[in-house]
Image (cartoon, rainbow, N blue to C red; front, side, top):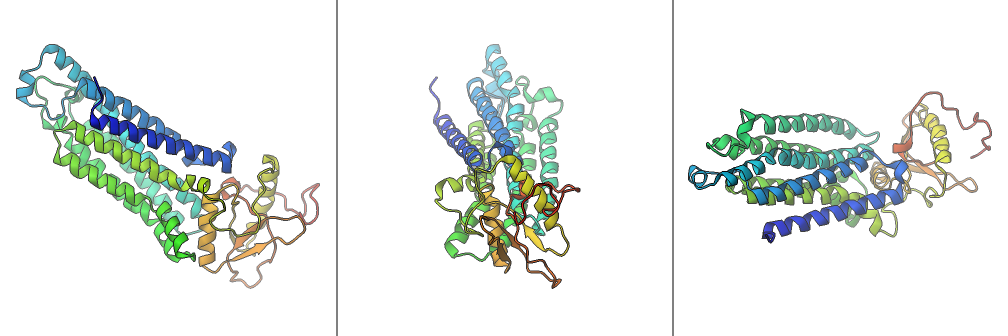
Length: 385
């Protein structure tokens, strides 16, 4: 049987989403390496797996059919073999819904991981924590709604006798997952907006960064369209299926756009130092520098707030550096021979802040443990390194 028009569109959207994820993986490996991956790098792989499962299930449901929107007249015309096939297709509806919400809420998790990196030292970090809890709670609520809205559960795939609209139209799923989806998207979107408003950048760059960090707007639009058209044609399973795939594809493209942006840039968006951290530094040397810095920047007399490496984390360093310049922070460069590093510091209010030059490192790599030796007392460390 030839694929229908919506199936052709769906697989095309799946191919685009998969390609974008592959680009993102390549970009992250190129910029931070596998050892520098953060939570969203792993989560996006989970999102791709769930999207693949969802696509496979929806394709099978298109072949076997389902009891969505079924009527007594249709049931009376079915043969026992057709009823069995439709019952099997209806069983697939449960994992299909679970895969769909896992994709959507997985994307939210990716956004939160990204915003967690770019809000280091800012009050918006609390918004990230609150939204993380809220997203977890709404995900659990959505899962419970999918599993419990039809009781007893076997009516979910029952065809004859007619199980009733509660188990065939799944209005409860739309009523819970739709508003929860929009609410969490809106709250997540609040996180980068204050930063964008205060950032001191040329308008063109501000627009580009705003589109990338506020790409959740496109997801909200896709979610709203899906709810409107799916509820309007509630008895047509193809309509809700097609819009679910569109929403998933848009979400995947939106959340990965910031991470693939460096692949299309010849330069960093913003540079806080003339040179970036050298790519050929060994992993052990990197952590050695991170350990020494961790203690020095925790000195109460040193008001350093942001530490990152453009070469290792271009997205977070770009945004935080832009925000730092917008709030009149100063960039302190290491002018010693052979040094290529810098650290962004907030102006000191104590009046006795140390004007020391430090090494710029990726905040995701700094492990704040006690017991680090200072640069001056570390055995074998050259003076002035």
